[in-house]
Length: 242
Image (cartoon, rainbow, N blue to C red; front, side):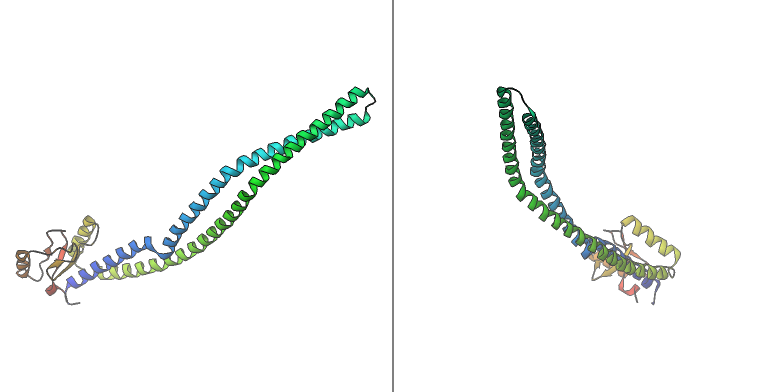
């Protein structure tokens, strides 16, 4: 390099690259794929919630019917047991037999209701199984993408660290006041504090300078640093750079 400003612009260029690499973290391929997969997973979860909203009440009703049918079956067995062991009057026996028949009829009716509910449950259960399988595949794909994202992040970190290391080496060659001025500007601007003046345009805000401003800069000494009136960055002129 032929001038300290060469080192300064190199530091600025590296800062631009580092910032761009940091921004690219949000758009790494695996991260974008994970975001899309998250939408798929959300849709699958909503599907399961809809299925459960239909399925769970039916299951609760089915369980209630099964319990009631079991109670009736137990009651029927008790009545028939008493009927078999009874030696009472014919009218009492007939009453117990009628009770047993009534219990059978009630149980059959409940079993018919159970069958109807099971028929309604069948397609819901099938959809639930299919959705659960799809959700498992989504989870598996997510886990694989997390591994890929880790590798992409690691590679990106290596690129950033390489540039930071190079920046650190070059920054040590700058005069302390110049480096401090640059760092202060960079911090205040939330970006880089120096840029090139190219074809009459600021490389930071990309606005063209007036002819008056350009004429004033042509008259500046080589060691003087121009300032962009629009963005406050240090403007390094062609003649200041090797």
